[in-house]
Length: 120
Image 1 (spheres, rainbow, N blue to C red):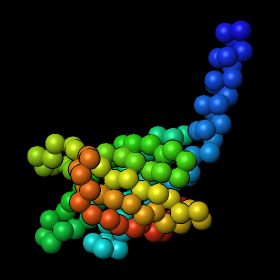
Image 2 (image 1 turned 135 degrees about the vertical axis):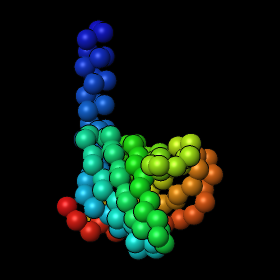
Image 3 (image 1 turned 120 degrees about the vertical axis):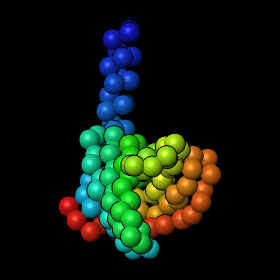
Image 4 (image 1 turned 180 degrees about the horizontal axis):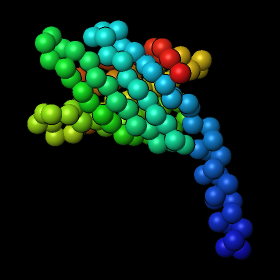
């Protein structure tokens, strides 16, 4: 009985992960010309971004997950006193070519934005 239950549970988990959206590739936010690189393995994602802010170069990186069409990750700014409490939450469009969502601190939305897929 335990084997049947465990087999069923594993099948359910595999099925859920199989339906995670594919967000691999380059995504662009036109508001301040940020281009993000998303790397996905199963439900886990890594994200990196480097952009110019005036005379400064800003780099941040994040880790998170994809569940269905929801993309969620926390991020840290490199070379700063960033405490790492930043979070982005997106919903992927049905055609997989855009994501809309929020940015801010964990539990505190500071703004909304939309990303467009620009590369593989």
